[in-house]
Amino acid sequence: MNYLEIAQNTAKQQPLLPPHETPGQTWKSRLTFIWALVLWQASSALPAITMNRQGHFELWKIGLFLLLFAACVWLSYIWALRYHLIPKINWRYFQLGKIAAGFGLMFVSALISGMIMNLTGTNGTENQDIINSIGKVLPPLVFVIMTTSAGFFEELIFRVGPFELLFNKWPKLAAIFAWALFTAAHGPTDFASFMTYGLMSLVLTGLYAKYRNFYLNMSVHFLWNALGMIGFFLLK
Image (cartoon, rainbow, N blue to C red; front, side, top):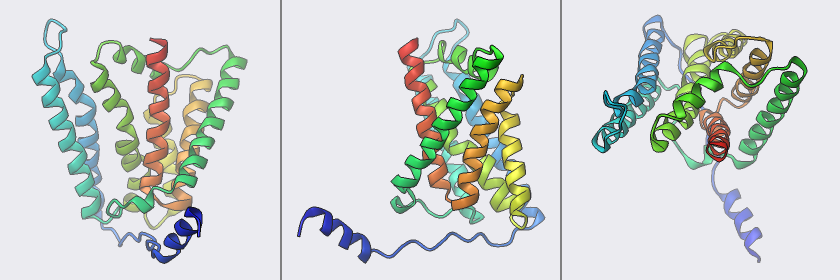
């Protein structure tokens, strides 16, 4: 018996994780979505504490950023578990084939938006320009954490929140709201940027609507932003 057969037999013996089921929500539980928004905004503002008045960075402030940022992530995760919005993390939710397929769809959406930009004579998006300008003044570690963490926070806010909390009884409404919220949050300023973020939102929202797997969406989003970080540092 070769290693492939052993791996296949082992996989068959392991029980599949049951599909995650979210209990009914009330108006009180839905109001906790505000708490998630607060944590997301707090995590986004934290990089500012790493810089002093002279524009220099201090090591202890970077350490404070890491501590507070980790607290925001942990509190957001506990919130999602508290209201049964996501299951506890388990490696079986990170399905490599689906992650690769989702990443491929993101790449296709980028190709389409790139073609639209070429046809309309647009060079990038205003949102990306802002991110790039921030990346030039922040310590690389802080910038990478801030950018790639979108895979965690934005999937909680833009996918899990609408589907499992706000509109859990109305999946079609949740999908429309999730798509529109993600697109609007990235501040499209013209047709090309609207299509760029609209297509990204369509892919990520479609993935969540089909699989209802937060960890799948988080992985695809994280990898896409990580690819953007590689491009940023190579072209810097």
